Image (cartoon, rainbow over all chains, first blue to last red; front, side):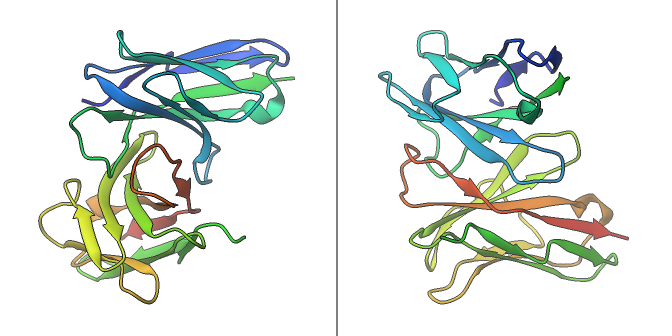
Length: 112
Length: 115
């Protein structure tokens, strides 16, 4: 029931846009997005909840298609600081509300 | 407001020794989660605790691993008789509420190396 993230890796030039996808085989209650830089802790970016509620950073946008059990993270006008590995964490319906099920991550590299 | 604190940041143990990892949640947070991360892998849930209670330990190996979150003091993840396969980064996270409408804040992690 681990969500599948795509692409696995992406390289951008500063200013370019990227979309990272997260797909689950189970109906989802919510999707959480985190960014992790090498050797550091994951940093919270956004939560998307069933029904359309969102909480997160102003400069990052995301969508949650409940019917398709998919979420996408949109990174626009990328900056060097966006580099890192992006993880989605899912909360399936019927699952424990105590834990997130994380995908394997999407490695984003932004070049000058 | 201090973030989630973990110590030690790096821990080296020989096979067969015990490892104790500590996690102090953010102020005002009473929910603690432990995750394990292998190189180039995502985070794998291990256990979810509230003060003095284990709520969900479905991700914990049945043997050698235990966790607690006492009324006073940090949460402890304990690994007895460590083996090489236990080498990983262990992260704890905390949140202010049980429901996963609320984000989890992660600590800097403890990198365990078993020699």
